[in-house]
Amino acid sequence: MSDIKNYIKANKNRFINELIELLKIPSVSADPAYQQDVLNTAEAVKDRLEKAGCDFVEICETPGYPIVYGEKIIDNNLPTILVYGHYDVQPADPLDLWDSPAFEPVIKKTALHPEGAIFARGACDDKGQMYMHIKAMEYMTTTGNLPCNVKFMIEGEEEVGSESLGWFVKNNHEKLANDIILISDTGMIANDIPSITTGLRGLSYVEVEITGPNRDLHSGLYGGAVANPINILTKMIASLHDENNHITIPGFYEKVEELSRAERDEMAKAPFSLENYKKALAIDAVYGEKGYTTNERNSIRPTLDVNGIWGGYTGEGAKTVIASKAYAKISMRLVPNQEWHEITELFTKHFECIAPEAVTVKVTPHHGGQGYVTPINTIGYKAASKAYEATFGKTPIPQRSGGSIPIVSLFEDELRSKTILMGFGLDSDAIHSPNEHFGIFNYLKGIETIPYFYKYFTELSK
Ligand code: BES
Ligand code: MN
Ligand code: MN
Image 1: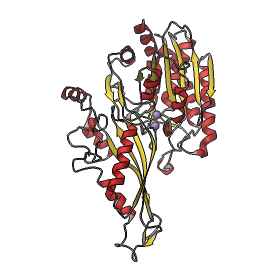
Image 2: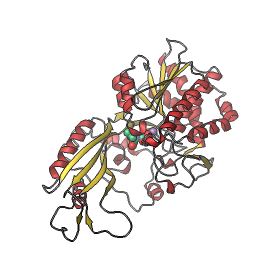
Image 3: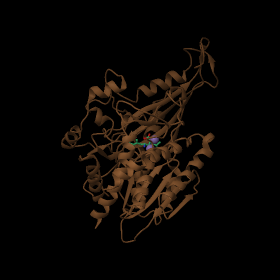
Image 4: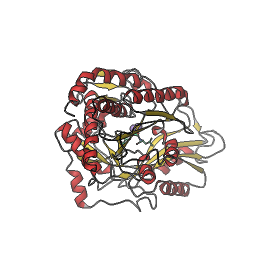
């Protein structure tokens, strides 16, 4: 394994160029206009897995986008690592906010990435991080350093709720049997402060529609005499938080696990600068639930946020109108033990209940999923920790993240195995935002660290 640094050095440009080629394909799963591109990306991933030394690779059809499956089984008595990642990306909109086109990758230096970063949609989430695993595999197979069996499962619907993957996993227990699941689709604290993600939040995503009068009305002739759905919707949404920024939906917090003082004190030891946080976002103050720190608010506490709101006239100039309908998309980030179907139901009941008689309410659930916490006293976590020590020279800090990968809890339920979240992105890499990027340092460090996980996991499993 001592040759890994040299291998990366010798192949660095090719590794970067191969990722750039993958990033040029706009595999936006949310928009049917990109259907062929999503399918082409699956083919490209299949091709790369074959070239990296998998013995068997296939495109598995599903009711939605296909799953690329690959494996190299060297000895049934050795442990098996299942690598999960996704080849689909978020839409690039709004396009005019990108400094360079989202699907024409460029390398630029930034303050946090002095060695350069690749700017493109999917650079960090998740093509770049997924591709680190394929390049680590290439290194291990071409240099005789693969210590165990490996399976790859790369999906194309993560950004839209992983519906087909749920179906695939339920129907393929034997094919996917493994000792540990390894994912790089999260982040770390900083390039000199490695961390391992030990928790993900769950999610309930709903869309609401408020209907008032049966048609758009003249706001002079009718204004003041009928319910304006936009006024009502904003009032209803505002009432979902109280003056302490607690969520007011009855039962919402019932199953929320309260961390002990000791656990919270432990969390607070992770390096964090509130000043830098505010500066990076150009805000004068943070905002959130009373009684919790910023890091607690975005990891161990559940939230409710409006993601989009629309209705009425938004064109040029002014139009005097009371719209018939108003809409909003609302996400609730959940913590472990909160059951997402239950929360969706509590939300629906409450939202219907607080609506005045003058309007009707329709709540349509979208996707959702359970949160996840992983214990740190397992060989999986220990192997990951040792791997970071080998390549960063520092023990990584365990850290719960605010993001969601809903399929992780389903993996545990269906495949009975734990997941290790070895993410190499930074919060500032702008995933889902314009100008998403992934540091070259992070990309190469990921490729370097992954084979050590294989080595230590195999050793510790003996
Ligand atoms: N990779 C992210 C999740 C993530 C990012 C977790 C950073 C932790 C740190 C994933 O692709 C994602 O965007 N998930 C969605 C949920 C999904 C159902 C659309 C999310 O968190 O909004
Ligand atoms: Mn992702
Ligand atoms: Mn994402």
